[in-house]
Length: 257
Image 1 (cartoon, rainbow, N blue to C red):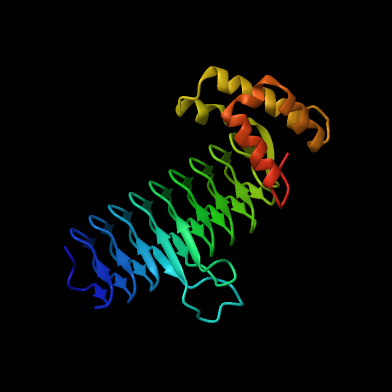
Image 2 (cartoon, rainbow, N blue to C red):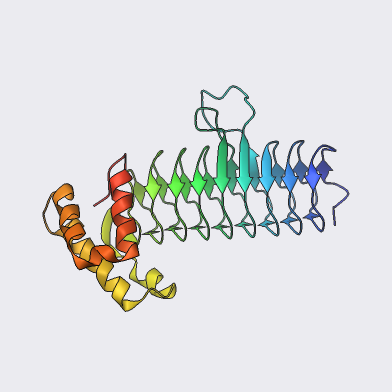
């Protein structure tokens, strides 16, 4: 059902079974996948691609121009996958030419009220951003990460899979996968044990990750020496430990410790 007060550009693509609430605005060159529900007073800007069966609540702003002083109105995009929930007053911005031209959001993510995703971010699947969580530009969030309420992440940071960032945390360096981070300047406080158990990680995997954590972050060794030591251990054969090592190796901003 499309409410008669909604303003929809004739060049917008609206899939089968889409609901659009009162006073929402859908601009040209926007597309909305089948079964998606758009609440009242939502603005979906040009260059936005929304997948199937998403639910976007009232007053959300999707695909707005990036908050970047160098942006001069170039054609850029925001791409969102399927089954995403976007709660009220969330703001998701499209990309910039310098950042590749596209903000990309995967599937089954949950953006709580007032969350913000800036230009050129890359968000995986089943990520949760709690109320007021804020991403600056060019941030990469891997699958299943949780970003706590009123936390803020610096541009170009990366957050690893299954990481948990607590509320009111300021993140200026990369957060490794599987870890729990907290503090005005994020520090690690061990594994995200509760989250990993909820996702049915085996006890063997948890033990391997705990041992890797102790060696890398609590042994007093330099990062290079600690990683080499982990690589020499039996735990290095565990896929999750391998991913942890690879994440650290490719880090450009540095790793929160």
